[in-house]
Length: 154
Image (cartoon, rainbow, N blue to C red; front, side, top):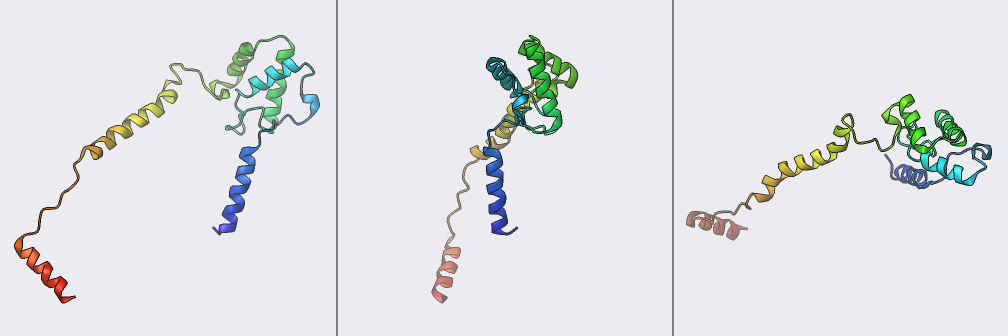
């Protein structure tokens, strides 16, 4: 890749990552009650867009994310609590809908994998840290004489 292409790609990626705007596309998507809208946005930040998978439903502009935002807002207007809405989402879309899955028997491996990886890396690297530095043996008289002769010739 050329240097200019890498620069442009890096700049574009930085712009995309730096964007903090929500994907709520039209004002009519927002709730008129600011307290309910704040709850909806907070809840939407905890739910994963099933299309994008690395974005929240609040950040995604995918049609499914828009539908999920609508469901969250509709259920809040009907008086459901955020916990009830999360439960509903989990029943319909599975545990994967949560950006931070709950700690359970099913997800324990996901939660413990980073710890297990670090422990394994430490155990593999520890012998390398304890190994003494290799100290070269001194030259014999014959090797010293040969080295001296080689240096003298050059």
